[in-house]
Image (cartoon, rainbow, N blue to C red):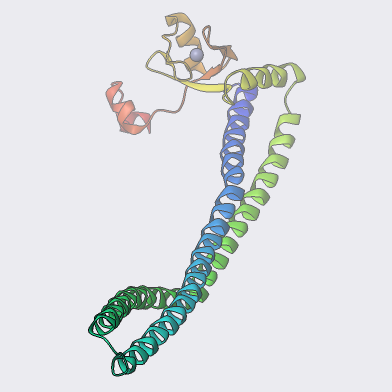
Length: 251
Ligand SMILES: [Zn+2]
C-alpha cells in the first residue's frame, strides 16, 4: 500500500475518534446542568408545599377562632331569649341564632376542607423529606459520574490528538494540506473507502478505470465528485467468497 495512503487512513481514524469524543464531551455540561435543575425543582416543589402547609395551619387557627366566637354569640343569644319581653323580639332573636348556627356549619365545612388539604400536604411533605437526602445523593453521584466521564474523555482526546499530530507530521505538507482541506469541506471525513464501485463518502459511482486504480491502494486518488481520498478496504471472508476466490486460496 502507498505509505501516504496508509498514514491518511490512520489519520482519518484518529480524527473520527477525536470528533466523536468532542461531541460527547460537549454534551456533559448540559447533562450536568439538567441534573442540578432536577434537584432544584424537587427542592422548590417541596418548599412550596411546606409554605402551603404553614398557610393552611394559620387558616385553620383563624377558622377555629371564628367558630368559637360565633358559638359564644349563640350561647349569649340563647341566654337572652329568656329576657325578651315580646313575641316579636323572641322571633327576631331566634332568627339571629339560626343565622349564627348556619354560619358555624359553613365554617365547619371550610375547616373540614382545610383538614383534608393539610393531611394531603403533610403526607407529601413527609415523603419529600424522606426522599430528599437520597435524591441529593443520587444527583451528586450521577454528577460525579458525568464529571469523571467528561474528564476521562477529555484525557483520551488529548492523548489521541498528540498521537494524531505526531502522525500528521510524518506526511508531506502538500498531502496533509489536501487532507485538511477536504476534511474541513466534507464534515470531518476526508478519506473514504470505495466499495462495489461506489465512493462510500458520497455514494457516487466511480469511473471503472478510477475504481480499478483505487483497488490497488497504490495511489492517492480523489473522488471526482466529493474530493475525498479513496482507498479499497480489505475484503471480509464473505466478500472474498462472493468474489469467487476461496478462503483456502486467499489464506
Ligand atoms: Zn465521493
